[in-house]
Length: 111
Length: 115
Image 1: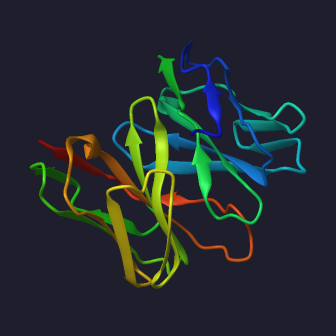
Image 2: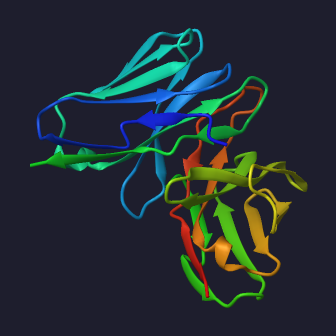
């Protein structure tokens, strides 16, 4: 069963706009990660946020984590055509090297 | 792709035949994983390895076996392929020991079609 569920399943925005996608999960976690997957390629790690962190930034990416609501959000600012991809959240439990992935959000940036 | 290769990249096989997929890494990472990706299901863990000859089952392990005789190679075997095993298979690695849930690095994937 999936631990993380992304919302929305698909999102289309104009280039230059901000894109926000959300992830909800069910059990306590050690950390939550976001990955990007371009069509026909493997996943690429974007950012990791630990359970004791509330917000993290990396370039145009901003991730928030609310452990009380068991949810996270990924914000991509000033979107570019190259951001078109699927985005997945993945959760890690304590004492466990395994990740559990959500079903992903398909983001399309319209030039 | 963080020094990870998968072979073959594409394979078409018939129901009932054995199939072995290979994952090779040059990063000397301790952990290796096999996932399958299907529409509507995201990535699901099949098996993983935490060292040479040390493996464990994932969420969807039925019908699959794995072996790791060297740090750099992790093999996934479908003993008797079925149409339900048509999927895209990804290998991943992570290397940080002593810390739970480290980031993973993925290979390019193998598209397997079972007819």
